[in-house]
Length: 456
Image (tube, rainbow, N blue to C red):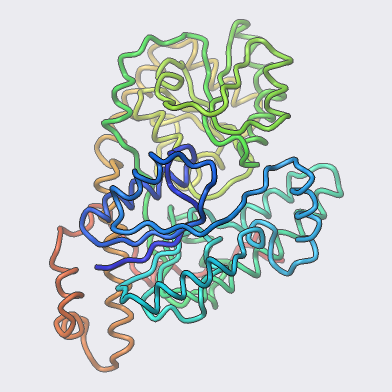
């Protein structure tokens, strides 16, 4: 198949969870299909990152865009201007005539079998009619994230502002899913949330593409010497849920852990730490804030416990599977592990209050038997079921099903088999490869549910 993949930026370097997920799925997809990748150019991108993308994709095209650094005068001026916009700020900042024109030109000049819009943002620059089957890859349910931000925000003025952004995102996300033949979700929980929020807008099935992990890459950290009192948090620190989670952990949970483990240490590993996160290390010498690192394996592989104290978020956390593949037990909030098919108490520890979270960490630090049992169970699970090579089959199947679905819809009265047989390219696509290793939900599974949390 010939696939047009729309992104907001290059997927390399692999320094964010969403980029990791897209990269590994795209890498496997491009090995069997012809992928044209379009995104905004990054002036700071290393030539090796662009070259790396071109080694995977048939064509890589970029559109100029000058990103605005957070905290600068231009950032706040733009933010003030976007407050009057009908679009949510996170979307309006990526609106681009140049991007729209390039998408239109690619669709007019080449015949694509399918279009994949990676994340919600690039959809703002898509034409009303793509002329080919289209899929929206939702790594999160964005409106749900903004709702959670609004619920936990302080002071009151920030809550009012975030509620406004939530309502705009709810409207934009609903209008956007209505434009696609199929939607891809990263968990059954996200699939159910989309169905609850947008029962009338969804016009096709919501396919679940589970989170995966590069097991072989991370297993190499298994032999590292552990620091018996080191905790680690990994993630992009310019993403608000990560910042909120780390600040919450250091203020509410870490002091409780110190009551039992006085010499406990914490490493915060991830790109672009905010000033508030940087101050944590300035005020407490037992906390390290690394900023961006080339390789997270030494940091996670040497830690005793990985912590995921998120109070806000959506989608699924790759950091949990990565830690599990390195044999590092995980303690997470329910939201932090949301959407991952894990067994609490066996594969990881779940705790939603500072006291219980601290107690779970202390147990794994102090109890070698509990630590080993959880590390072994988690490693076995990800090795057997969640390597990216298996997960990528689900994405390929979802694209093929969407192509066939649109073909049948365009030719009333024809069966799926006859429709595929009449299109050599489509028939060839369905003959390549084995059935997906990860079962996909049938379209009728994505039914709305009544949930008062989603009422406006």
